[in-house]
Length: 49
Image 1 (tube, rainbow, N blue to C red):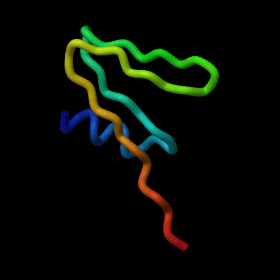
Image 2: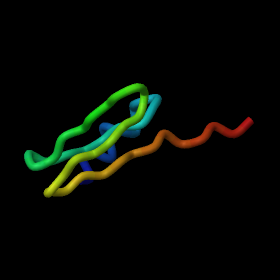
Image 3: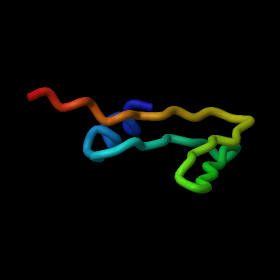
Image 4: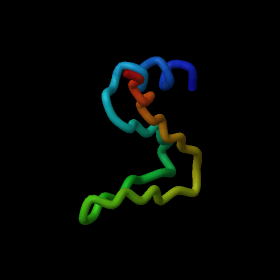
């Protein structure tokens, strides 16, 4: 998971780490995680001004 966290830190949006028992469904702009396994959503940090 540490590798996935480092990878996600360089992405300017949400990122998902999923296993082979997980799928991501996107329909009409809505994201749904379908899983019997393990997954984690990484949100990009909010920039402060």
